[in-house]
Amino acid sequence: MMATGSTSIPANLYSLHGAEEQLREKAIGIIANDYRLQLHLEIVEAAMNLADIFRQFETINEDLKVAQVLSMRMFNAFGASLKLVLSGYHQNSALILRDILETVFLLNLFARDRTLIARWRQADKKARMKDFSPVKVREALDARDGFTAKRRAEIYELFSELAGHPTMKSAWMMRPEKDGDAVIGPFMAATTLEAVVSEMGRLAVQVGEQVNAFLPADWMRGLPSRVSFAQLKRQWIGTFYPSPEERS
Image (cartoon, rainbow, N blue to C red; front, top):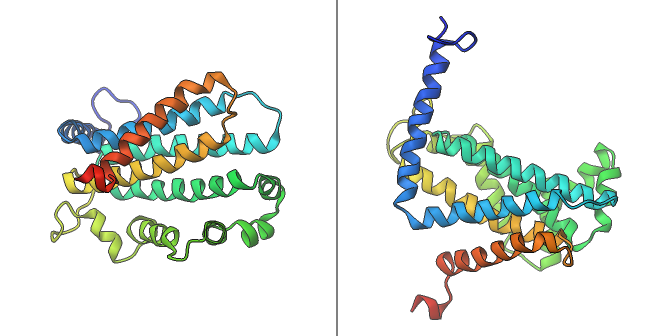
């Protein structure tokens, strides 16, 4: 049965979209009353803006083009993730955030050693998995930075368990109430919305940092976006990770 006024969308899917739009309005209302959520979304926008300005930089350098494409991928992923979480699909939104996490780790690796870009883009599947699989990239970053706590692996595994794989823990993101039952379809709960948007903000800081590392310092067209991101980054860090002096 087709919806009234529609020639292609089944009635139930048309109705589902209407419910999603109602949830979006509810989500916007929740965000409007929460400065911290607003700040997360502002840093997301700033990171996306950096990615957008970066793709406009004209170059014949094939390695730099790879960084541009990866930045564009993260721009699209942020847009899709935001669309999903505001529509009540929190778990699916988080799944896309895992894609951003994996991509920003790869871009981070390339930012400090740009010779790796050519190796990556020219590698066949076997070589790519041997040297640039998600776990290999995380291990290389930890070794480079001298990190031993494996925090990168922990956050990747968290995204995988809650959103990436069908596990018992993944049902947690399908519950409007912590101890309630899982539900089918989209829903809006302030705690779940906050959890996903907070992770989105944390990822956006990393994405902006890595995209900024590839933007030519003397390219004046990119300066306003870089300055805007830097200002928001300071505000974001001061809000969520204040220094002892700021806390007092």
